[in-house]
Length: 122
Length: 135
Image (cartoon, rainbow over all chains, first blue to last red; front, side, top):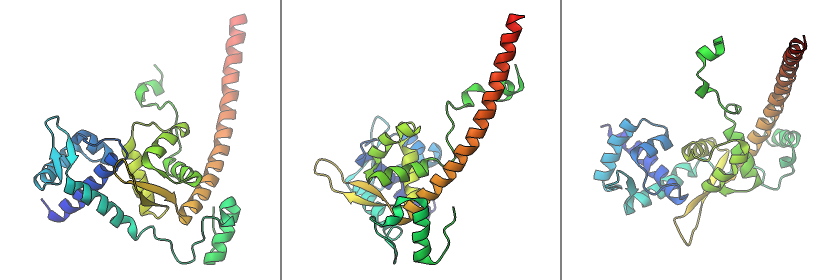
């Protein structure tokens, strides 16, 4: 098993399971439910789930469901925020929520044109 | 059995057809109305034609929107349960929403042409049947 891939899948699974748990969608999904949620083949995911159980991040139940352990919960929550932190930070010159440009597509185009010097195409 | 019935199984014909990637502008619209967390979005998507039983699709769409910088999320502290992600629109998301709305207006105009031509066809067919019944 490629360890880099294990780390990538681990973050994906823990983040998704934390989200499902926090939104009260499911706190203990089966491998099938989780594979549908992430849109990956169940057979592929199952191997990783076993690994995460062995690593103490997940707990496997007799009803064939997986639950986040305490460290799995912490890790899922932490990596979720870290991953997106740099992507959604406001950029220099970004207008605020009350800007007049939110009123219409034409206003948005004009605002963008003023800010960036580019023509906004529809 | 006509050609369409032979080659298209009836269970593959959707009850309604939504434009491709319609979920993205819908989510942006809902977040323009007000910031929301996942469960709330799942509920509010129903009047826009989305089923409530596919939370994974919503999750993946939100992740994709966030990766594209169209949406951002922050932790919402909870006193009674786990903290949740609260999603809100970014400036880029607002611009994308305007562009999507413009594209949907154009799609709507094309659909109008299709439906008016279809209505003519159906009306003609119906008129023929009425004449045949009378003769």
